[in-house]
Amino acid sequence: MNRKRIVFMLVFVLLCGLLSGCEMKQSKEGATKQQPISYEMLMGQWKEQAKAETLTCWYTSKTDQTWLESAAKQFEKEYSVKVTLLYYDGINLFEDMNQANQKGEGPDVYLLGNDQLQLATESGMAEENDWFDDAFWSENYPEVAKGAITYQGKQYGYPLYFDTYCLVYDANLLQTAPASIDDILTFLDEYEDTGSTKAIFRWDVADPYINSMFIASYANLFGENGDAPKEFKVNNENCIAAMEYFQSLSAYLWMNKNNISHDTISNRIKDGTLVLGLCKSDILPTLYEMQAVNENKVEQNTENSGDETESESVTESVTTNYQVSYVPSLTQDMSSTTFSTTYSAFVNPYGENTALGNMFGMYLSLTCAKSQYDGNGKLPVVNQKDKFDSMQAVVYAQYLNSKSVPKVMVLGDYLSESGIAFDEIWSGKNAKEQLDLLQQTMEEKIE
Image (cartoon, rainbow, N blue to C red; front, side, top):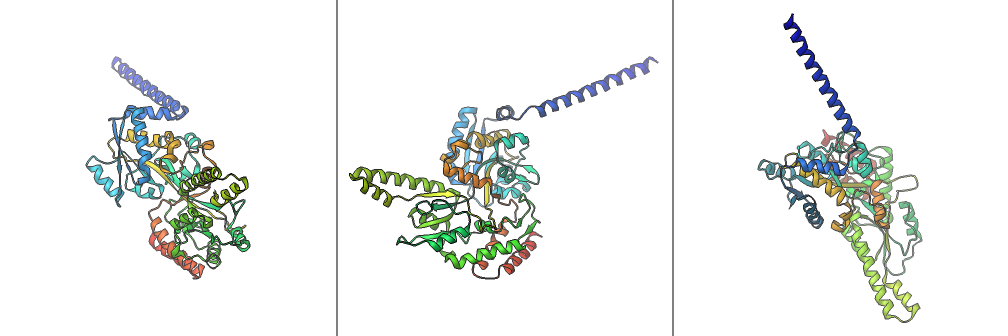
């Protein structure tokens, strides 16, 4: 009897302990969920977990060097962690990263565009970012950025900066930017060249990335989030109509695709011989340089001229006034949608210190956002609001309304095959037939 009682008591105590433990665990989890995520909390948590005082960061764009060096110096001063920066210029990033990991020399964090996210995740080289709750995401990042680094419902990395397109226009000739390409054609009909040999409208018509703006509103380019390889449809009625409109511009604008590139468009803007151009968002530094040169010329000419009327005449003759606007729709009824690429800091799960990798990635994303443009000429993903000037605000708004470039591994096939299709359509081939062929070719590649 006593033995049974003792056994009963032991079981009772054990059950009480288990129940108490469960209640404590639930209470702890509940407290964690109730406690909002904060930058300071995460940085402190990672610093405590850190097993070393050094980390390695790989980057793939030379333009990031100055910005990263400044950020690394600031990070070391603030957190007593030294950052080793390594520029990677190879062609097989994840293969090389895997080999480096096996030697204990892989990066803790690396910078990359979202277009390679499927490859990064399926090679196991991207750690999921499950640190942020929905409130933190929405408070700090726009929806397009969150979507850009989401693959199969999971988020990865820390968004840094972006690339997209914008319209650059000569504000000396146009009081307001045209809302549609049809409006540009109307301006072309009415424009009288006074000897300045200006081209009216140009874009790199050989670039499938930018030409996709004609069909991106109507095509299914690998699903809503760009991460569904088998979801692909580019030959519906709206896509065909859009590409027929694209083809009509070939004869109207007299553009030879072999003589037009992003560089030639930029050069035409520099010498003032273009009215309107679709440009990469990295055109901004060029426009600021032009403004600075013009201001200097005006100042010098004003100082050298005693006559006010003569001064105004000289000022008008030496200044260009290019501004940026949103990429126009095609017509009043047909829309356009630009691609954007979001570049992020991704944590390598096989790095020597993932805690520090997360720290530096988040530090670059949030703390260093304000120095992003001055460091590499790229606008940050985090909205700087009133710290953006008027041109930057327009480009940022264009990004917010862009479509994130697909992150599937067949993206390269799409760009290659669509480039062929766009080229044939521009040259006069039947738009429906070319889109049907593109659809068939991509279905074969996807399988």
